[in-house]
Image (cartoon, rainbow over all chains, first blue to last red; front, top):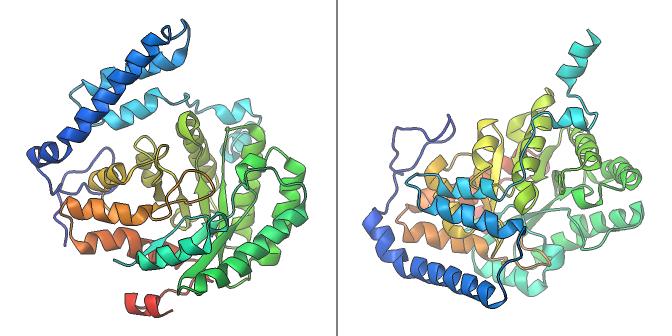
Amino acid sequence: MERRLTLKMRGDVGTMLATQMTAQAVLDREYLEVRAKVLELAATFDRLERGGGVPVGDARLKLVRQGLKVLLDETSDRAEQVQLIFSRPYDDDWQKGFGMAPPAAEKSEEE
Amino acid sequence: MYYFDPHIHMVSRTTDDYEMLAKMGCVGMSEPAFWAGFDRGSVDSFRDYFRQLTDFERRRAAQYGLKHYTWLCINAKEAENVSLSRDVIAMIPEFLDRPTVLGIGEIGLNKNTRNEAIIFLEHVDLAVRYEQSILIHTPHLEDKFQGTMMILDMLCDDSRLDHNRVLVDHVEEHTVRHVLEEGFWAGMTLYPVSKCTPQRAADMIEMYGPERLLVNSAGDWGPSKPTAVPDFIIEMRRRGYPESLIRRVVYDNPIEFFSQSRNFQAPDTVEEAVRT
């Protein structure tokens, strides 16, 4: 049986597993890979500069810079935060905009 | 370790891939209907495609002892053609009693448009009326979060729906929690660049536990790796997780979800699955 922690992660879904690897073990295993990824990013930015720099107003590099800032935060949900930076916003009233009111809303309007 | 790939598009793969999957421990797969790379022009194109999914692929897989199941729909990319979509939805019941059909899928959204939402709801209604399970595609990249939340809104608005019979696929770090919180199953797709890596899939197992979580390769005609599930297995082993936990995600969970479909023949044991 897998070991379990009692704490719940964000909300009430699932049970977080006790990770089998210590931070030291993760670093030992992934240091060279992380180093390579950082180097790859640095080289890509250099390539952009050699190409004349990114045109003003191109939103993509702005998103990349926002994502890079998240990496330096001391939180446990960096991956989720980076995903959200690269996501279109969600409007919970979207059905109204589409003229597709959900059943409950239709019912209350009829009433 | 033996496993099921719950989402792979074998019509796009060679027979050699079936053989390779069998050698890698795959005992079966489910193949949702999807986009062919071009928009099809008539309902008969889909009828032929469904024949391929329910007949030819089943036989091709069986040559290597693999059990091939399938899901039927018109995908979200073609849903902008509402008229054709409705013709296809009306034709799908012709195939629902075929012995390897597990349900309706992969339905969903692509660019999160009104027509896509309309056709999504009509597929859901079809599934409810015919008591079918549902497999859902969530959009790519910047459209994923918005589209996933829209899909969850539509699913949760339908009080007829059994959430345990719905698999929401291609979840990532920003969508997995929302899907699980509503009581749906969630699938993580292992792709080389977009979607999820084996390492990030293992991270999500660590964060949320193995309940209602699946991993798949979604191997298709684009950049993809049909043997991605074994990559996930190796990653979990490298992290020191027991075989029982890994097996739960790659074998037991697919069987538990598929077993809700009347056409799924659940093996009593792994040995039986391999013999089949």
